[in-house]
Amino acid sequence: MRLVIAIDGPAASGKGTLSQKIAAHYGLKHLDTGLSYRAVAKALLDKGLTLDDEDIAAQTAKAVDLGAMKREELAVHAIGEAASKIAVMPRVRQALVEKQREFASLAGGAVLDGRDIGTVVCPDAPVKLYVSASPEVRAKRRFHEILARGNEADEAQILADIKVRDERDMGRSDSPLKPAKDAHLLDTSKMTIEAAFEAAKNIIDVVAIKN
Ligand SMILES: Nc1ncnc2c1ncn2[C@@H]1O[C@H](COP(=O)(O)OP(=O)(O)O)[C@@H](O)[C@H]1O
Ligand SMILES: Nc1ccn([C@@H]2O[C@H](COP(=O)(O)OP(=O)(O)O)[C@@H](O)[C@H]2O)c(=O)n1
Image (cartoon, rainbow, N blue to C red; front, side, top):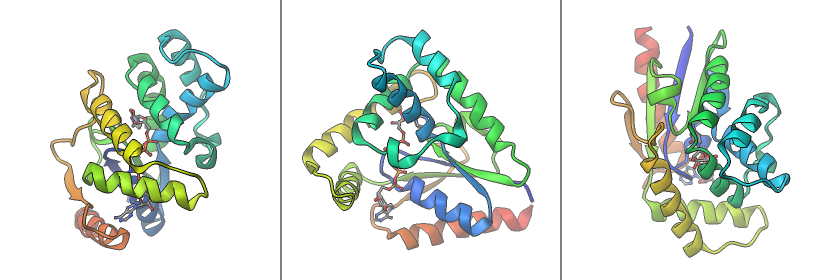
């Protein structure tokens, strides 16, 4: 069966963790589309280039190789912030969405996670999940994630940054973050990773049986 699973949600809601578990369980490839926006931002920052020139950002986006993106290099907090700034640019999105759709058309199906997978990248996906959690819970998760990597972090600052990023991601005119009309909503605020995975599996299995 060719199963495409679209997973969207705000920063640190747990969509990446859930996507990896779902991909492993169903034997599907996984693409974290956030990394592609982060790769553009990092390339610009590394070269000391401005984040607000759409021509330069779009050229950089065209050169992104989805197969070469490394989470360890791109998971830095500041790169996430910069990514959401270049992600408002339509021509950056166009270049990256083209590559993401190509990935989604992989023979055996795939799991993609991001902000616009169910609404723009794969609007025909048979399974769409919208993963959320309160800003406070998400800030705490990201805070512990940074500490676990051996780095220092300020939880209040992370919460403030998450709120600004939510506003930017939900408020932009091109492909704003929102649940697709046919998305299943999964609020993980009070769920463990395992409980969120079980809830997602129950939703996906119903679709998988029908197909
Ligand atoms: N349901 C959950 N309960 C507790 N921690 C979680 C849960 N889901 C994810 N996490 C943790 O929260 C952090 C952010 O999760 P991640 O999957 O990277 O979020 P996103 O991809 O939405 O940014 C990670 O450290 C992850 O282990
Ligand atoms: N499909 C996507 C994925 C990410 N993005 C942008 O890229 C930024 C970083 O995404 P990410 O998924 O890596 O961020 P986290 O949720 O891991 O913090 C987001 O804040 C969005 O602005 C997007 O616009 N569309």
